[in-house]
Image 1 (cartoon, rainbow, N blue to C red):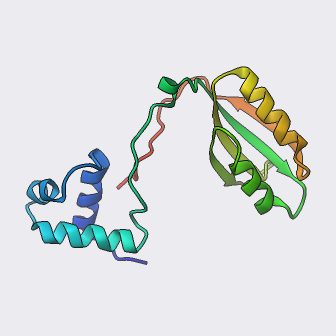
Image 2: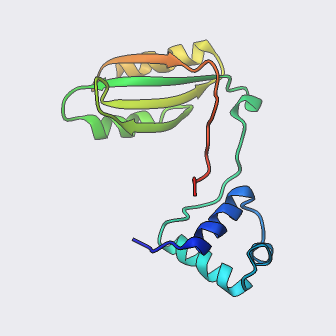
Amino acid sequence: MMEIDELDIDIMRSLNNNARKSFRDIAKELQVSLTTVSNRVKAMERAGVIQGYMPMIDATKLGYDIMAVIGIKVIHGKIVDTEKDLAKGPGVFAVFDSTGEWDAIVMARFKSRTELNSFVKNVLDHENVDRTYTQVVLNITKDEKRVLV
């Protein structure tokens, strides 16, 4: 595991605010050399601390107005394979192992109730799925996609 210090955290915070910010601008902001920022970012990328850069997209502006949290009860011993299959589903953006009554939690976005209905019925048709429990998200208070440093 890579040792992260305050400068690394400051660099990640700066990238969180704007991942397109130049290393030169970050160096100026943090009052360190361009080489220091470049070397630190490359080291964090190599160590897998920074795994990539992507735009933050508002899914509702693309028509995905329905978000669902779906609990999945999986037939014993088939959780990993089932989760891999479910992760390929349209609109799925997260799949988690979980404790408690549900073996897996799937989070997905849909453009309509019809899409959600079809997705849930397809999940129930999966040979390793015993049952599901679906909750529709009404409002989102916080949905942070950036690393919290």
